[in-house]
Image (cartoon, rainbow, N blue to C red; front, side, top):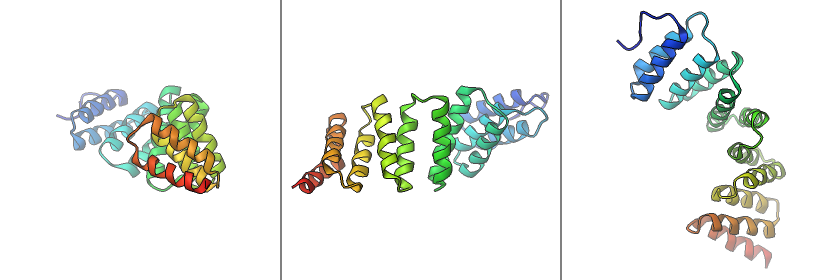
Length: 197
């Protein structure tokens, strides 16, 4: 029996749903989570676990909705940070860039030292065409974690778009220091050096 029908406590059903998620049983896990969130007293954590299961099984639109419900129902800071972070990824994947920006900014309001949130905010801002802000967000993320080669590369690309090839070349060099096999960074460095004349 997938869900414990003897229990009418949302947290019990939610835990069982997560166990089934870990076991890879999508149908049973999602049924348990739907049952848990349908009970009186289902709070933010119950919706959070449902969202994580939906995300794990590729139900991205449902996961976006459930993460939103979890945040509206209130979560402890650590789970709220994770909910905003995952929601931002799902929103960006769906092309909801303004919403993704808001989610990453919400993460950073909780934990301003989370390098990954700064970097992903930089990605979203670049996609929104806000290049100066993108460069700043990448820079903050790289200050906190300078080993992310892709972030150095993406920051360099934003700098090239801003017609700042010398700074872009520095970014591509940093990407190559972080990952010497990063061929796109090598090609981009060559292009930036040509731009410099």
